[in-house]
Image (tube, rainbow, N blue to C red; front, side, top):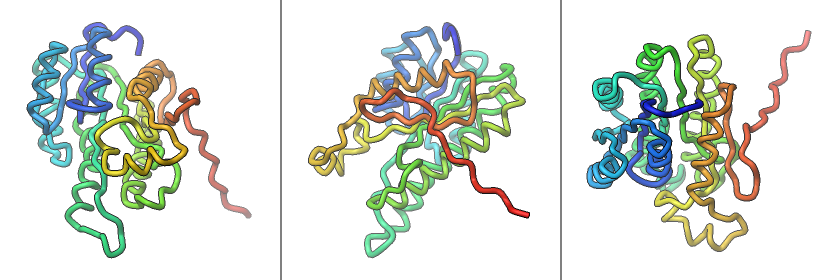
Length: 247
């Protein structure tokens, strides 16, 4: 994206974790940052620290997403970058532990929040002559996760959405990418942290995820899904081409 001075960025789920770290780095590089979240206390505090703007936003509510975009445009005159980062754990499986309310909440935040956020942001990005959308997916969107099939399902959906939307918006100078970290050191992994700590897969430092986010901003491609795993340089995941028809 080049120089971020006076660029306007909207970060959903920006009050904590990866979103907060991205917001801090964006502000450090001169961007005006709008933090959209449901954690009013943490969001207001961070906005004050980085001289940004906080807006209360439930990303599963399309009206809230539209209001967050409008707030960015009203305060700063436009929108250049959107990080659709809000996410939650599933909290249930598909067997005896299935919980329809928990399922709907997870799908609402993790999938609807990305689609609604993109829908709300695209007109503002077009008005600026283009921009970038980065959605936080997960390595669970690239590989099967037997212990979290619903979470894996909504993250696979985000990956498919990003790959398709990237192609659809290429002629509008709007780049679309997915950020796909493995287990990062955030509150999201708290319920399974003891399991992860006892395994062979190291936990990512959040700043490594932020570094990958900024690699994405420097990319001249679109529709890519960037993996972030310990000990490897982040880069776009190489999907195999699907087999075509035979005559």
